[in-house]
Amino acid sequence: MADKIKNLKVKYLRVSLLNGCNFNCFYCRPSGVRQMASANKGEFEKFQMAIDLFYKIGIKKIRFTGGEPTLYGQLVDLITSTRMLGDDLHIGLTTNGLLLDKLAPQLAGAGLNSVNISLDTINENKFKKVTGLDRFNQVLAGIIRAEKHIQTVKLNCVSIKGINDDETAGMIDFANQLGVDIRFIEYMPNINNPDDRNRYISGDDIRASLPYRLRPMAKQPTGAARYFRSSDLKIRVGFINSVSHPFCDSCDRIRLSSDGRLYGCLFSGESIDLFSLMEADAQKPLDQIRQLVGRKKYLGCAGALEAPDNLPSFINLGG
Ligand code: SAM
Ligand code: SF4
Image 1: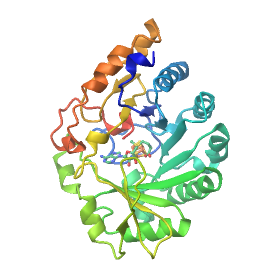
Image 2: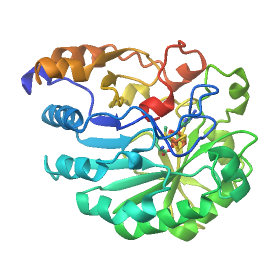
Image 3: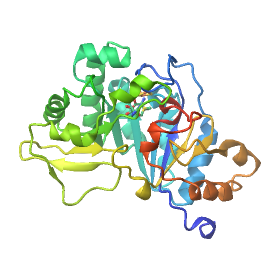
Image 4: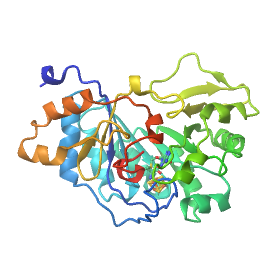
């Protein structure tokens, strides 16, 4: 099997476990859809089979996302069974942090290596405006608990013009006090909503507005973020400039949605029905996976601004 997919470029699988969420971040869903935790949930055994297949073909990193992955009832079991594949696999989670205060110890015990917690503001009123819920303090408790139990914790903040672009320095101070790295992600406008395009602001503009002298780290970690340090800070500050500086030519990601479809890119719209193909024969999808990866278009997440309208939304594919 190894031979058959030797040249496969993907090393990083992102699995969206469900498309429901306990938050209502205005920028994440197709326009007008307010979707709570009802949602499409993927079947446990099918996820296990898919993860097993990808591990065999050389995936080195897996991230559980959603919707909100902590609402997936078998999350801890899935991390446990994924960890059993091997200690060489990095297992990460992206979450809004609301349930981490309760779950962090179990997640760590199951073998989770890292957690990225999404936090767009530290202003409680704004938090409610962005997420639809008045739960900033519960998320803060989750961050603190995660830090105690989970090896690596990072904060992810989507920079949105007119919403939180005046708060970046404050967010960095906040992260610095907690001792966790923070990354600023360029907002990818929802193509179905023209107003959204005005909310985009580049990572370079955000960085230029900061009072810190941020120096790029000489040795950059692998991944989408470019990291900076400052003598005033103990943490690293990262920028994920997917729109202004697309990293498509080094992209090694592939994405599985909760309904079992495999996508090469957030912005290509092209997918294969992995779960159905695996039902017939667990090894059968190899050729289709290779073809899908081969057709990744490397449009750039800048493609967000001119992408076709049949794209899965972030809440379906995990951002
Ligand atoms: N619910 C989890 C969370 O919020 O972390 C995981 C799923 S969420 C879709 C994954 C990430 O996508 C979050 O960090 C979120 O901020 C980001 N995201 C959602 N919509 C986005 C957009 N339009 N542009 C940039 N990032 C977006
Ligand atoms: Fe939910 Fe995450 Fe989307 Fe916010 S960004 S609505 S927390 S899935």
